[in-house]
Length: 328
Image 1 (cartoon, rainbow, N blue to C red):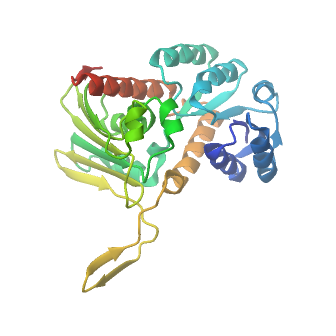
Image 2 (image 1 turned 90 degrees about the vertical axis):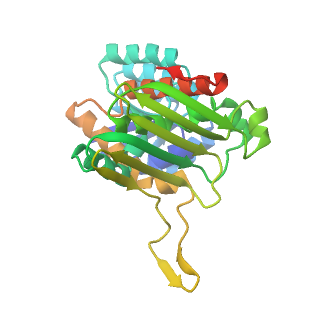
Image 3 (image 1 turned 180 degrees about the horizontal axis):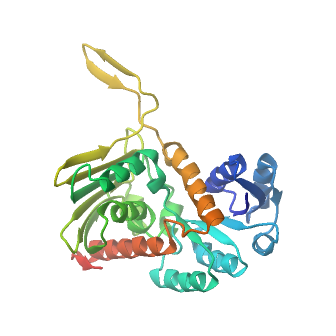
């Protein structure tokens, strides 16, 4: 049984808090949030206590800290938690600055405590099944990976302004998936981006429509397509082409019902948001972290995985700004 302290009681904190409380292998001991009313409310529905972040990090009745606070607090909380002897599961990213991530990981390594970064898409049952079949040689040697990731609509401009940009905020999940599926580190990044959804996003210094091409040292290629708008729902698809064939994982729909008539075939809409689409992935992510803590095995995705994804996001941002490919 792993005893958790949860930092952050917002949207993602509520999801994690509910998953911890529902897990037979975990106990949610305490919740903290800068908005005390949010911490009180989540603690009440999960059977936990509302405490301060400092109290949670220093508590003797807590084994692990799950960090779901704002990005600018992640690295500091990670360092404080591991120095206090806690295992850490932190939402992505560790920080928006790769240099800051490096110094944070030095603290983690010196502490000897485990750090897992929340790239939950690796745990999606469909994507995980695709990865296993890849590893089993279902399509031979991987040659090309295509990742489609499109949100149903953009977040508020206030969020865009502090997000670090589409490549660091939204596409970072896809950079982690690219590394996961390619099996090699990308060494070159090409990127283009446009403002096609909301002019205010452009005024905030970001793009809302973007494509990236990654190349590994052996020549494997990955194309990533991201948009802040998909009128048909949350679009999450993967295709891998190999020397012996192709494998793909498609979208999840509200139901599997389809209707055929003179107008053709119709299906129910795809799931509309990441909380719905990746609900099973978040539960499996938590289970993997608990297993790593209880068995003393290195958690994955690791802090280094978080660093490598951030470096790719930085390279893509630079490639889009300069119009030139960037070596990684």
